[in-house]
Image (cartoon, rainbow, N blue to C red):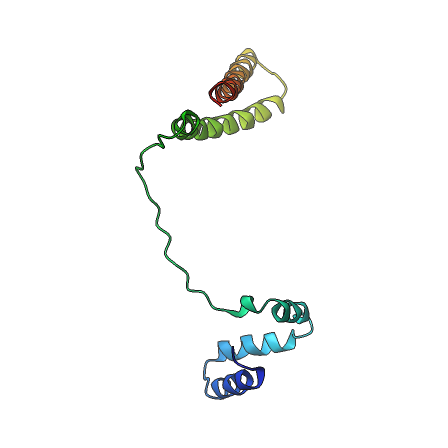
Amino acid sequence: MMDIETRKSRLAATLSSCDNPYVLQQVEKILVRTDELSPLKKMVVEYPVLLEEKRLRDMVVKTNLPAPEKKAISRYDSYVRPIFFFLSLLMLMLAAAILNAVSHDPENFTRIVFQDLIFRFYLVGWLLYLLDFVAILVIA
């Protein structure tokens, strides 16, 4: 790690040859905020690893992987979680519809039937969550 004087001289030389007004403005703003950045100075002195530059590695998303074969609960989880993800989205939409329907006065018969139907679908969704919980307890 370079000492501070060497870094300052290198930065001063780089700044003197810099023609980009945006970079100069940003450096000027940072230098104005030195008092605000003093906690960062203390943290960097205590933890010099924060100054080390790390190369970001590319992250790869692997798809179509086989389900884990080790335990029954991991197989169950890998098959059921995507279904419950979409069920959760449906439940979220149903909750929004329930809130929207309840916020209005029941003016006509069709609205009452619609509210009842949505409440029943929402109840079925929660029963599926309860069955999932029981299945996990049985498998585990």
